Length: 186
Image (cartoon, rainbow, N blue to C red; front, side, top):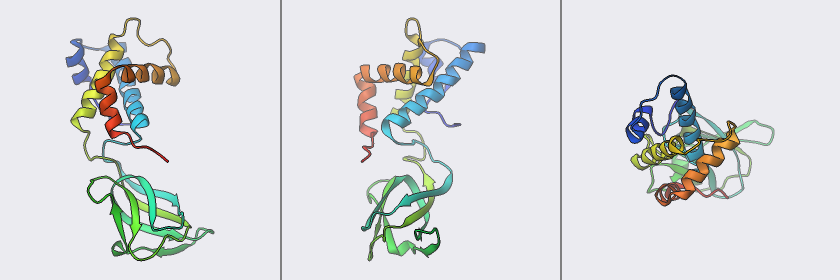
């Protein structure tokens, strides 16, 4: 991962400490862990991802739920054998919600999804740039982890996740910001 929700300079400013050598490597590892934690907790990606194809199974209806997407350049329908049935014209569908930058549903205007497979080509992401409150939360979580007496006990992904989750849920400001962005998956 090359996009983090905070940076070394912000963490150093918050903690009042300059990191170098092995400490800097540790902080860089935590940058990735904190970013992964925030994405996992909120089910969102707070930066513009690369363009790519996303595959979905249709559910016979007018709407198709998709990942947070900043733009869609193509929607293609495939049959159960994987053969292309149709490439939808952009006038055949609309991206929802209408009042948000990130779209997470496609609604067909005149027909219904047939229930096959769909390939949606677009740019993933909830926002093109990291929101300031997410930067603040990432900086606070990381600074709190570094300031914990005794530090993190385990050096496993589960250990980092537990400690990060504990720091995030104990602080009502951090939890409030993350909960505001949280996407509930059904």
